[in-house]
Image (tube, rainbow, N blue to C red):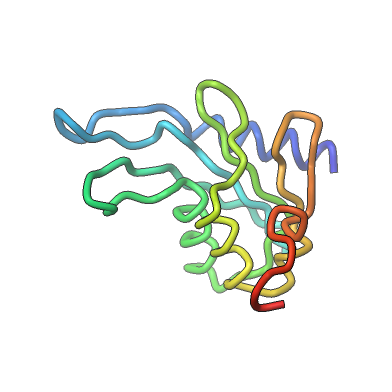
Length: 127
C-alpha cells in the first residue's frame, strides 16, 4: 500500500493549485486522486463557490471514475498546500453510496496513516 499511497499523493499534488474563477471564487485549492480496484487512477479538484454550488475534489475524482464506468475505489487521498486533507462527511457518504465495497477502501488520512472507510463511517445506515 505504501507505493500506491505515495503515487496517489503525488497525483493529487499534481492537480492541486488554487486559481481564481472570479474576484470571490476559486478552484483547485484541494486536489484528490483515486486508485480503483481495476488499477486506474482518477483525479479531481475542488470548486469553491457560493450558495452550496461548489464541490470537493473527491467528488470531482469520483465523477471522473464513474464516467469510465468504474465504482470500486481501492484507495483515495485529498491534499491541499498544507498537506493531506481527510475526506469530509459528504465525500465519505458518497463513496459508501457509490459502491458498498468502498466501505473497505483505503483512505489516506496522513502521510503514514491509512484507514478503511468503514472506520470513518461506523454504524453506517446502509450497511
